[in-house]
Image (cartoon, rainbow, N blue to C red; front, side, top):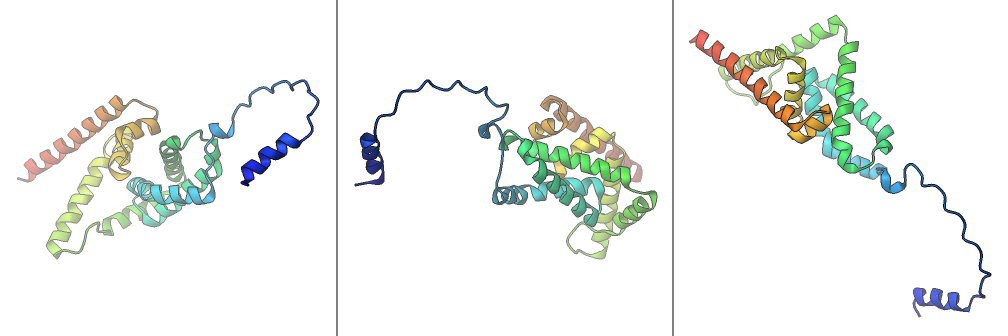
Length: 210
């Protein structure tokens, strides 16, 4: 006899209970387990592995220092781990995580001292972002990166933010819109305008050098 059948037979043989008046229903709680996102430590570890690369790319694109970026990303995931139960669904995790990342980057810039900023800028000048090539190719590549970085830095802050989320973090327009609490149309138009500015400025420089 199966366990289920034994339970059924036991219920049949049990003495009948005196009918009681059903207890009044309690008011629905503001949040039920179904309404919240409560990942286990193992599940959060999977989210960490899924999003670390994108978050690091975004932070590094805004900070341009590897060690500082790692510290900022560490703070991002620490805060996410502590506050993740405030989410209602896993679908919201990505945009919520990048909102934390934006806040941490802003906090970093507020705390950074002028001397640290100067050291960071010097480090950027000495860093190569490509595989080893001939000395001539490395020099040209370094100059182009430095120039492009300067051009992007000359964009309005909001355009810089959206460019970083789009090309460093590789978020979709919908995800960016969610992070920035704006519309997809606004994101698309901002990206178009920013890229047009960059193309025009690079073309002007090329024409002047030519």
